[in-house]
Image 1 (tube, rainbow, N blue to C red):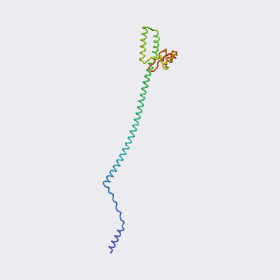
Image 2 (image 1 turned 45 degrees about the vertical axis):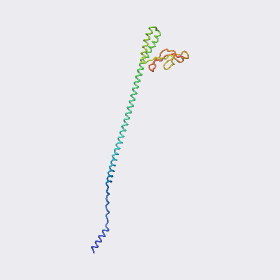
Image 3 (image 1 turned 180 degrees about the vertical axis):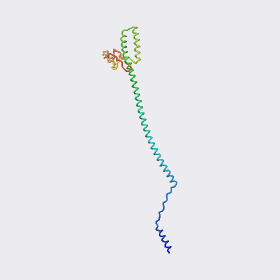
Image 4 (image 1 turned 90 degrees about the vertical axis):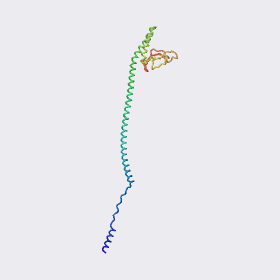
Amino acid sequence: MSNKKHSENAATQKEHAPQTPPTPEKPVQTDMEKALTEENEKLIKENERLEEEIAKLHKTVKQLQSAADKSDGYLNQLVAIKNDFESYKRRMKFNADQAKTEGIGSVIVKLIAVCDNFELAKQHLDGDNLKAFEMVYGQFLQILNEFGVQEMDVLGQPFDPLKMNALSKADRGEENRDKVVEVYKKGYTLGEKVLRYAEVIVGM
């Protein structure tokens, strides 16, 4: 009887004892899920690597741009120096040519005075003496021509104050109004430069 009672008490205690909840089982990944996880991790690492490469490229581009800007600056300086040098050469050539022309001109102005003496002397010669004189005078004028000196041809031409000095006016008919009717002293040019103005009489 007591054994039965003891068994009943033990059963009662077992029924009222606290029950421990079952431990949840970890989810088991399938092969496909594992493969996707590994692929995702690879993509994340690849993305990080690409971001680093992009950052390096941006840095390199900035360095190249800075170098290009400096190169452009150097190139502009070289172009400016070259242009300055070309201008300097042109100025030096112009100055040299001008000095040469002025040097020749100053000598020729004195020789032109000799031409005036030739003209005066010719008026007092005739015959063979005149022919010999004109031959020498022609050679003298030829030498002046070789230096670029030209005698002005103004007789019968409209008066030009840029090349002529009017000594006086004379009535030589309507057809000669404002034209050169007499040349008192010949004018000469060297290129475009007037070495000596022609002294003339102008019709009125």
